[in-house]
Length: 492
Image (cartoon, rainbow, N blue to C red):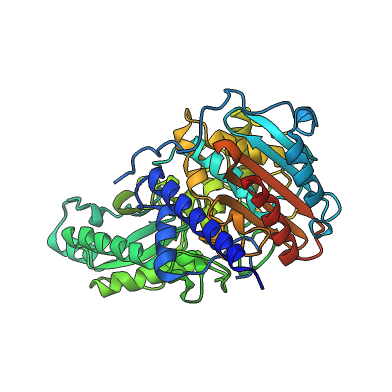
């Protein structure tokens, strides 16, 4: 049993950490989106979390990270220098070195710790070795999407028609011909834009706007089509049918979830539909009928005509908010959507292959150390993904650069240790509790793979970026505790 003073110190550390985390979140901006909203929702509802193989008006520009000082223009040191032992603080090496040798982290874990203000690596062990990142790859997804698309970009889902009757065109002809033409249903198309957060609430608003536009044109019966041609290549993730991700399509409702988890924004594993696009079209047809429109039959998948006239549109929240939600909850569906949006922006196919090319090209353009990286997906579910701990810390340091405010959601979206997202239930052991509330980090978990990458304010008030990657770990729980212990040591 702990002595009273120990209890007081432990509780005090936790409370101080939560206060500091809350202060940092408040300084980062209003509680209006993504991580900040997710933290508010968690505090109110104690919602659940999820992610890659885990068990369980436009906003203004993001404010600079409050603890981030200036960084070097060139954050990416040569790959060969990432593991160099020179100039490492003796205390840090003596502390982290033995912890990194824990058998709970497998035979050869990798580590990188960087001083964000200078770009200098303070600790490195196999930092240039490409390893399976699991969900920490979402940090790369976030940086690429924000850099390519901008934080204010929104993803649209539209309803269009090429039918002359819906356009209200007067083609002339006698009254009998007009009446016969009016008896035919007007063809409309629901066009998926790749919004993985589309839900029944926004589909309802879209149906309302569509019905109003059609009534204004004298249309009361429609033939509904749906278009998912924006994406190409395989719909199924290489992991196969899995509760952690739906088939990747340009149109879905509630991420294809077949249970009540679609009602919240916390994600997590859930049974998934095999046809998310068809299901979304069925829901939309029902909503149109609720608004007095007749439908001539079930929705049919068909590409929209090129000369189609837009009837209605609904937009996702800004990419800044999508990034925050993706990182907080390790949302795989959003991750795959964002890398495809990045591919579209780059003029590449919106497929697994096209997304890989687009993301790696974007990071290379940012002069980040992408040597050896293989980004086969945006979510980290692919066991063939490879990334270095040095690249992860470079990505985090770049996101803290005062000259790159558009990347700030990468930092504000990271879960807070012991408080939110996939870190909600961690940092509870005595050797890690000092990190509770003090650390923001992205988790990664696959069978035999465990990772953690994020930021912490270290001694002297320096903002540190860290990344730890472990393969062939004997068990996820012990590996996670070892990673928590490693990162918590950076606070003292």
